[in-house]
Image 1 (tube, rainbow, N blue to C red):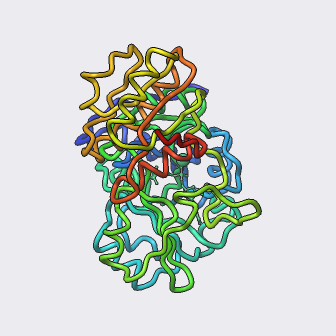
Image 2 (tube, protein in one colour; image 1 turned 90 degrees about the vertical axis):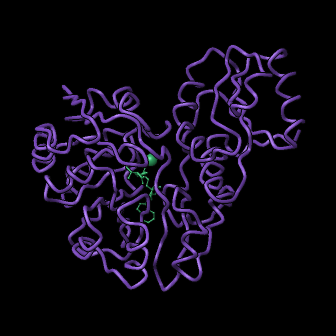
Length: 344
Ligand code: TXA
Ligand code: MG
């Protein structure tokens, strides 16, 4: 398949590329587009065939449901049974990097929700995503626009690398500001449960919802025979080709471990900016300032892709803290590392 690639700047919401992409979506085609979190691979959310094409293009198991993207929070009414908490969250965080899971209405086919009777709703703030959804005139079902198992794409080049030739079009609109996928909160049975941490932190959610439980799967592996709240939890995600090991310990101990490792083995090191003056490894990747968790999030997936392309035997990275934005980094890295943590 010949994939049309439109290179477009973030502000260019009036570009003819948007109308062309919207037309493709209305006709059942697939279009990848930027959001403030990561790029999405979009198809008409009410079209079963479009959903099937999304699963095929990604190589994704069809029991792993898709997120429905809308242009304004009220549009959720067409697709889900909303509640008061949804609107409180919407007021605080939408448009933005938050996905809310609600009981679904019949307008969304089961093929989109992997057979579940709930649906994930997200209203992205990225100007091109907003313009595309409005121009399409339909909600857009979109998982992250990567091949299943590789890191989510945080810039147009990642999408082109993974999906060129497999979908109808790519709106290549630069780097995603946040770089990690949206926070997912489930609102069902009067309970709020955080299923995936993201830029809307657990503390921020707790300012709006009184009680937010954090699903144990956010930090731990699924227990044997445990039924995941989110089907995505059961798949190995963001799996680099090289083994990834996370280092836990005092700053000084981690640094001396790395100083030794870079001489002893062929390793890629994802390090803090402050460490670059001490580490002199040719396979060093600066992940951002030690305290700059937003910057680290922004750079993480590109760093993992770059690390994986290097001639090495192993990747080392710091174990992130578990609070604030750290929890989102922790969640992505611990899964990419298949829970391999080394105490140093
Ligand atoms: O930032 C994001 O959320 C990006 C952009 C494109 O919006 N999308 C994204 O989609 O990350 P995806 O498909 O890669 O991840 C969605 C996760 C999956 O783990 C899926 O299992 C879960 O959301 N999910 C979707 N619908 C669900 C539902 N009804 N119940 C529980 N989990 C659900
Ligand atoms: Mg994904």
